[in-house]
Image (tube, rainbow, N blue to C red; front, side):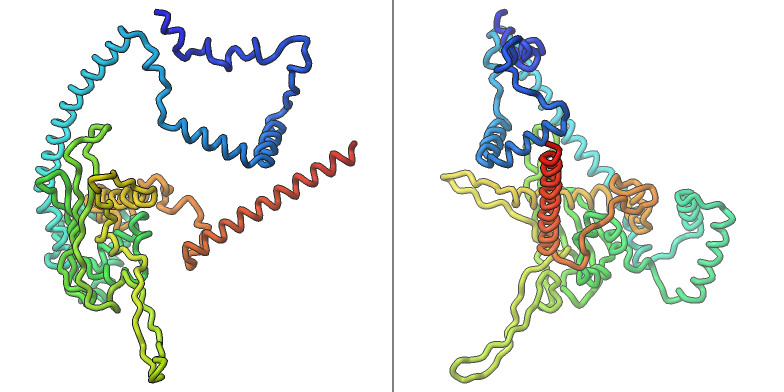
Length: 413
């Protein structure tokens, strides 16, 4: 049992026994002066690192090497203890098999209940498009629910209802359904709203329904249905997410890849994923001038249907995924899950904005608790430059303050 002496405990770690060998009584040479305040120790450390960039780089490199490495503790255990650990691993593998069965049945349960939701979602589509008219019972139930959500009293709600009815008779005789329902709902869901450009708005005004379908293989499909529009000829745009066959370490399905439909744009002018630039060229010999059109990919929600792809693996080497691609893949999957789990089940609450009250980054009143410091009209590069300038200016201020403190100390001496 002597092997247990090597295990890390509060008794044998250097921090707990530092007094026995870090300092020796009666020997001032081995007793360095200790800063009396945290601020002084921080200043000393900052000064040491700022004056020794090579030391800072070396420390960062060493720390980076330690991430994800084995401490060697398991290898130091006695064989009898290792055998028990091996047995625990065997039990965990049995648990994995049960988890796999659970996830398979859970997926089947989700698919079953999605079938039960379909008639409700079909009725939602018909109401949005104006194909059917709501019943008086549905109106009363919905009005009461929204009044309760907004903490409105019945009298105020009745007056409001009368005004709404009057305005309907006067102004909304030709209005059917709920115009721009899905556009408004998506603009109220923060991560998706950030994906929608001004040009996308005109296209998304033609969006009349968003549906979910589960695949026979592990995965799901998002279907965006559009009415006839001048931008593209597709009636629907689909995005399919596939899971890996094997479960991940957490016992859940792991995202594998996504596939999206090709959008049949009417022309480059209507393609909101392209930025067009007209350039004039003069022929060197004939001196004739011609105008050419240069199309550059640009920011757009409709890039969602062209998901990032993993590089093709070769037989010789395993392809490494860089951080940028890995982040893009994760963001793409997160948006798909967001539409599946939040937008589709609670579409009317995103349309009214009520769902914002339950978002962690928003307050109870549905307003963003954080001020947006970036210039909304500027591009990302300019905002990055401004951040860099702010950081530089902060450094200058700190240097000035340090110089003043040094001058004060010199004057006092």
